[in-house]
Image (tube, rainbow over all chains, first blue to last red; front, side):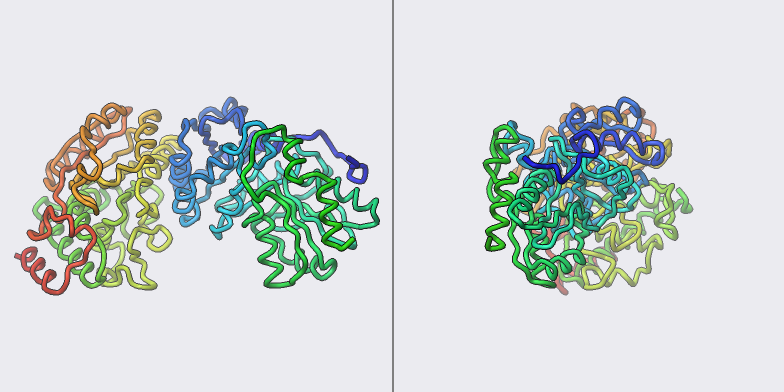
Length: 317
Length: 275
């Protein structure tokens, strides 16, 4: 795929790995921070924190429900718990999140890794595909899906500084590095990777890479697409959406997540109420399955070709 | 204890008044849970009056011991004690379950300072309490943490996750109490879902276990004392209680789990309680 218009600024890294590194970076700055795992520390990449700060790491075994509520208790004592598991296993404990984290506005950081079909061979049971939808119903939980290494590190730091519940949505697979050294993560602010004139493509996390390919392909067809990294699902950059609606009249969302209530749903709500435009929601509309990540992205339409073709159709071209 | 200690007979008198408060507030609210409030009141009053370090005029004092009412439907009992100790004016008890009231139908930390955890969705309180106890240990603090659960409540799986994990962290600052009143909404607890042998289960999970009469103030006080002396293990107090305790026609009657007394029933109950 043609990515030449998007220069790499560093080594591709899985955002779960960036999270693991970020924890080490901020450990001294936030002595109240503790990390809690449910038997997945090697996968969530908290293992290095565990080794360096064993007294600040809690291994709870396979008890995600207990972990969520326990973390709320720890937060009530002034600690800052980061609780990590696969996104689907965390959000599967929705009742605990609803009562202990959401309703109580607990200062707990939920870290869900292995999101989307991008995890590949493990199949649907391990794929978080509904996590954004579920958490969007709890109005006070910040939802962030960082797009590359530099952004993830800053998002983790922001989460530690922010007093309130945060969900970090992280990938198993590597993400290309596209932010430069001087990039500043801004919560709730759409991150325009490339400006354009004809249509806005809004991507998040693992779909940014195929969206880059789509933008390059569209350029070959004379369509100048704007590419935006929507790292903040809540707060959502409504100002950007209103502006994009006026400028383009056409928007596309691409997410490795259910379009029902996900980024696409969130964008649709804002556009319908504030600035109607033609919207195409690309993402999952069914359950996932096993397969190599690339094959799954091919099958479910997360490729430059598929995104470009559907975007062109939306524009009537 | 930061409050001057009551004589035992004074506490008995306080608790008699708390039972009156519970009946009156539930009657006024027109809904709520008398059975489990009356079974728990001796335990809750003993905690607040005798056992816990706390400051009614400074509910968020960081050094306070934590009390988590996991069986949130029993909150009228907690409100009665909190009002009695000066957390808020007793007059406010009249607002139980009313719109814009701080006294929510189930405990909410978002509405009333002094409520540690929002509960009512059963089975979560012990996890929260365990988090408090663990953080106290990690931070080198001396707070103790108390969690009161219902017997029906411990049918929830999450309780057993917490039961399994608290001993791993040697949380001897954690005391779980089961209000074993033998009844839940759909019937006798051990018919709905048998819990026995209950002490054996908690012992097998490495808890220090004490069985008491949950209406005997001496036994309650001794159990808390024994828990304080227990090292490296959390303590489980299995408090045998009577649902609806103190009101003859409510005692042991399942239907009083979640029904408020009408005017006649209230008058009859108050006549009994006021002697």
